[in-house]
Length: 412
Length: 143
Image (cartoon, chains in turn brown, yellow):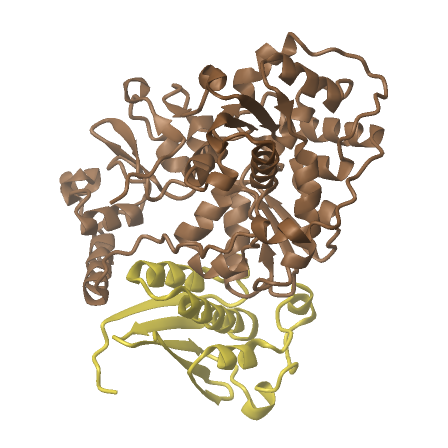
């Protein structure tokens, strides 16, 4: 099996084998084996909940750095829209961009331009997929759908995200100017680990390749040195509708689709996806789904708290009176659509139907022996997950403390 | 169809329990994903099972959902212990509903339940006796 890259990973030496991450993983991707947490890569969706909860700093986000910036002739940075909410409401996007240039980039690409393009295409795109259309902005949500809700793949919109659109436009622009693609370094300033993983997946597509995802929290203190508090209305082109994409609900507002809902926080996302699957939400046109609380401003690799970041964004938006008028993009529109079929990545018990059925039966028998207390001492997050692990040969029944102590369930 | 039943699971459904209503279809869906059933088929099963489950929650005194898995199909039995349907033909009409005001406000009981189940299934049978029971049998083929 192909080794899957995940940004969310573990420093084994720091792990003391407590069960905090085990019990908090929304997709039951963690086990504790021999006193250390282990992440099952096929299940992990890079939401970062384990990083947030671990008191020992054992869960970390693997990330890129700016060390090899000098490798490229042209160095372009795509800041996440959330970056503009990290320095208070008095620091305007133009000042933030200026600070970025001082860090050694040749150009700061205006991601709000890509947001406005995405919004324009998205308005029509939601008609081309199964209703309700589901947003693809959050890589964690996409992975969740691919691994646990494959029937909802047909609901995912096809338009690329603003980050991918930005990379495409940058590469197209500089290649037209005569630069070789490998000489163009494109870096994304990310609010979350899931984008670190996502850009690795994109790396085999030369047109939208991003060379590194740098956590905003890593670059923050370096930027602070260069940030000026001008608070003057500098005439600077950044789009107010583009900035909306940073917090939950903003995307729906940007595309102006009223019959829509915005869902944030991974547990809420799971609840709503369950409802979509039962057909209960078929009347809705569009669902904005974001894994972090309050959307991308809730990203783990940001500095400001999500709710204050939303306020700051809104205050900045009030100071701006500019939106890109996006038309005449028909010549590139087809390149901004993802036509590749998304893969069903659900974990099947077996490729053979009959042996899968046998494993389910076996699991049900094991469940009946277990206490049902979901204590986690066996190293699996619940008795049900443990039964599955035993049936798959990943755990042995004696790992259950209840059973190894001779416990028997009451037959009453 | 004499093929033997491979697996059977049963979920109790409690009358009026909107909080837990939907658990049967949610659990069944996870099971079908693990078995490797095609996702578009899972979606149809999920819709049919959920509607049947919510019918028991909203309209009945309680009952159960039983899913029997065969080599080529799933059979879902949705059984409740009453009050039963006096006029099945009428109940099968789109838009016909006896749901309470509260249930309707929550988006349930729009009179689409039974027609929706029928639409999602390959074979659909309904029997009922007033004061005794309602039983749905839903068959969906895997291929």
